[in-house]
Amino acid sequence: MGRAKEQESGDIAPRQKRVRGVSKNSAEARRKILDSATAIFGRQGFARTSTEQVAEEAGYGQATVFFHFKTKAGLLEACLEDALSRAKAQLVPAAGSGVLDLIHRLDRAFDNSPTADLFARMLVEFGENSTIHPLYADFHEHLRQLIAAELTRETGADGRRAYLAAAAILSMMVGIHAEQRLETKRLQRAEFREMLLGMTRLVMADLTKPDEAGP
Image (cartoon, rainbow, N blue to C red):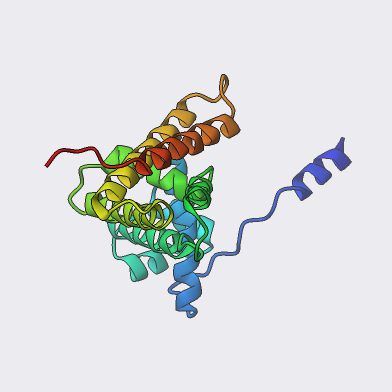
């Protein structure tokens, strides 16, 4: 019995030893705090998260959190800006990779990750916030432009038609990701992904048809 308890406790990773005061390694401290805050905000939301929790998980004192981010709101804004910046960098399409490859990578980028959890929860809590709303709007515009550029390259559609098609695909992606968070029993993740890719194929096929809009 004692040995079992000893083995069980040994399986639990010890918490990081906390650095008291302000860390001397500023860049490392900032990175660890951002990573910890992103994970905790995504799990339990902004209101239920304390800077003490974030500091403890990152292995620092609250003084280091406040030194870098001033307030809890400042920490959240930095988390969102950092997550969006990293997501943009990861989603630069390879030359000639194609629309379906881009959509597949976009879908995977926000699938069951701390970043995806953060985006989803903060959009619910603060979707109309004057600071956070523009961050989301800017990121979604970035995604629309990425998709539109690949659509134009692959289908030859003009700029406006490609942009509207990109907006439709992105809207489907957002909706599908919201639905998969609600429905976890009747539909598999792979089925949701195939829905998105299937709808993307339909949009692409429509773009190859002549534009029948009147003058």
